[in-house]
Image 1: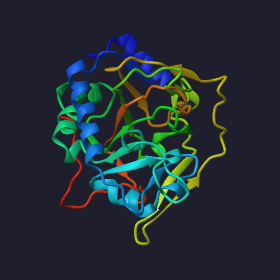
Image 2: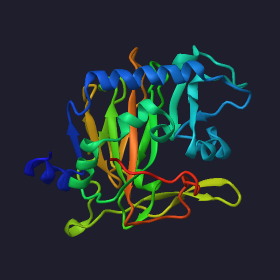
Image 3: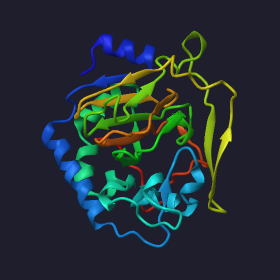
Image 4: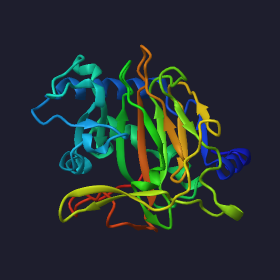
Length: 287
């Protein structure tokens, strides 16, 4: 599937853009299903926001409970101080997570198959395991900023194997908050892996979460970054150590995307990772 040039680009830059990886019909099906999930969602008294700027906005219990379920999380700016909606419900959701690929038939079909399994193999994931899935809405006008981070912070393995599969469900543009990356930022010296700056840790006994600093290497500046505007149906796949971010969406258009976070079963998955699976709900592959 991947050409020698694409494989060289993957090794050098830490990401690939694969236009047309999903058909218009496949994209439309998961977009409709996401809308149905939001329509059926009933906000409660303990509504959970999601913010990467202020992680206290989402409760530890709400996030941990979503590991084996399908939960909706609000945009930071969608609720007032008392938790009341400031915008219509269908324009208020930040994301749906985190077991769509296992709990929902439409997303299950979208998240598995020979094309994805073959791509993972070509990228070096010989025993892929899909830990997390999420629909990210990036709502018009209130879509939140996502600051610089590395996805490996949330799915630590030894050796590092986490790989992100990011599907554009709508056109991602400079105006509505497309991804920005630092090409090559996943690499250290002499071709070795780069540094992991943070680890999102969980004390599973206490049910508490915290971000722990690991390395003082500064995050890239926007002058070092490149934007990745892509059309709906494009798959952007990137290395777990690749620094990336996205700006807030102040445009009138949403930027719907769907992500999978995948590790290799041959690597040790950290016990302090926030997302764990119970014995009765084992992690699955991509095939």
